[in-house]
Amino acid sequence: MAGKPPPRLCSCFGLTAADLERIALEQGLTGVDELGEASRAGTGCRTCVPDLEKLLEALWRAHPRPAEKPVTPATIVRDAIRPFLHRSPWELHLIDVDGATVRIRAIPHGETCLTGEDTLRQFVENRLKEMYRPDAAVVFV
Ligand code: FES
Image 1: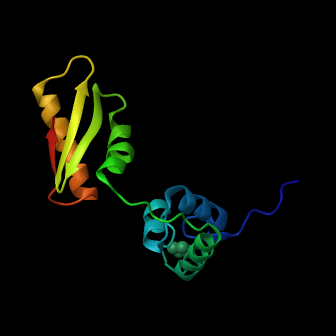
Image 2: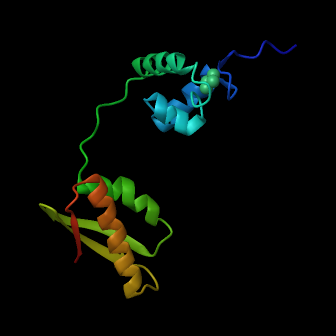
């Protein structure tokens, strides 16, 4: 015999507290607005918003996140750029950083073209501008 279904925390979208905790943990969501974008919770009648705030507060008190690691060009290349290149013919190695200038060796594997290299450089530079500093400039060496 099936048990009683868990109570809905957000009845507009049929979401339980367990659903919302899972989504918040998986995506690292700490704010009600972020949780709403990810799940729609709290974006209907909004009567559940105070409960969503309590849920998130209790969740992150019980699951403290490790201190933020410093963001450096090396961590950006490793964590935010290389994963997107796993099917591309390029391998990137950070050579050095001098202020806003980031020197990177881009090693092609297989067929590439100058347009591909320029597109890659622009992609890497845009990520560094977003995550490191807005005046970041990438030089392929
Ligand atoms: S109960 Fe959550 S938006 Fe209505």
